[in-house]
Amino acid sequence: MPTATTVYAVSELTEILRALVEDALPSVWVEGEISNLSKPSSGHWYFTLKDGRAQMRCVMFRNRNFLVRPLPRDGDQVRVRAQPSVYTARGDLQLICEAMEPAGQGALLLAYEKLKARLQAEGLFDAGIKRPIPPVPRAIGLITSATGAAVQDVLTALARRFPLTTVYLHPVPVQGAEAAPAIVKALQKLPALAPVDVVLLVRGGGSLEDLWAFNEEAVARAIRACAKPVICGVGHEVDFTIADFAADLRAPTPTAAAELASPNVADWEQRLDVAERRIELSLGQQQNARRDRLRQLEHRLRQLHPGRRLQERAQRLDELELRLSQRQRQLVASLHERLRGHRARLAALRLDAHLLRLEDRRHGLELRLHQSIRGALQAPSERLASLDALLSSLNPQAVLGRGYAIARDRNGEILRSPDGVKLNDEVELQLAEGSVQLTRLR
Image 1: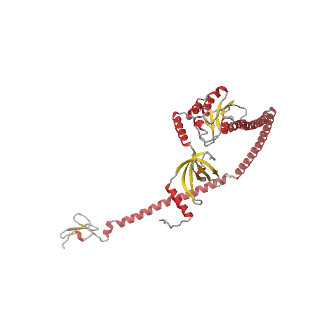
Image 2: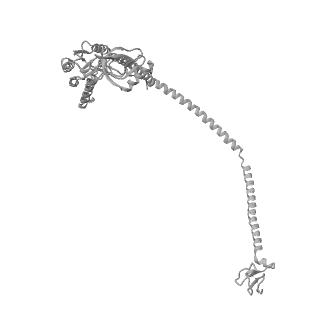
Image 3: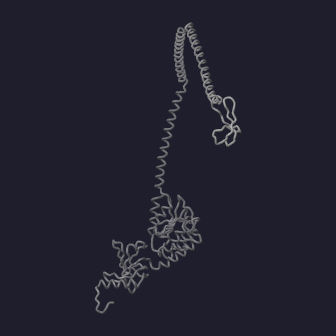
């Protein structure tokens, strides 16, 4: 807590004051007259806002003032939204402005928005009721101030782009209480007084109050009731009026309105130059094509001439005669060659020698046949003897003849072990000659 003996540096005290002011007062709207307006190269604005009893320094930094339209001037009555603060370097109370608009503009804007919403809901701005702009107007009606810059801008643009058209000027006031009724009357009378194809309703830029005549409902309805299409070019690009929405076509500036209403003769000339070059090129190509076709026809005519065809037939006949002569010579030579070959083979053939060779061959084949038959019979005989010996060796009688016997039980089954014979069982022994009955006693 500061005491009566606390001593502050000036900078400390100004910082305390700034904090107190900014904490105590939020952003506020302040209305007054601009004076001492300064716009240095930094882009910031410095000015004084005053009324009949007081004044206050103000600053509006570049990042805030670039959206302000129209640009303020000394003497303008404005309304600003600002943060009260203290400029510590001088200890001055100041307003740091965040937004600015002309005084009274708030009410005008509210009226503008209400009228715009009502007419839009009514369908007065619908795209479906917009009339097309004639591409080549014979005459253009112009409604604007006779002394303003807009009329000169429009006339200059039309003279440059389309000097063939006629311009009918209907001068009217474009600002003040008399402006709206005069504009309505001009929209009603001009199409009847002059043979215009399109009407331009234009004026230069200004504040919302300056442009208010173009925000009147009567003007919007007169635009839609006008006998000819209306192009509206009021203010600058950022300015939008009720008349802009009601018009058949909106232009951002008066000069743009003139450009939208008229074709550009320079474009026509350029298109004509292009068309001329294309025609020349096409004619040249057609001429070259016909020249080539003529050469082709002349060549075909020479080819189809009877004398030329007779020459070709004679040449073909000579070629065939030459080929026939060559073929005859080749055929005679071939026959001679074949005849010599036959004679040589016939001389080489001797019948007696051939018969001897055949006899020798028959004798050899007969000998080979006998040998083959003997070989074929010898092999089965040897195989039969071998099988007979094998069969004899496997005959049981041959085994019994060597002193062996076959023991059988009373059922006639061959015994292979004494375990199969019980006490008092009879056993039959088959010998080489006859058999013997035996009984097991132990």
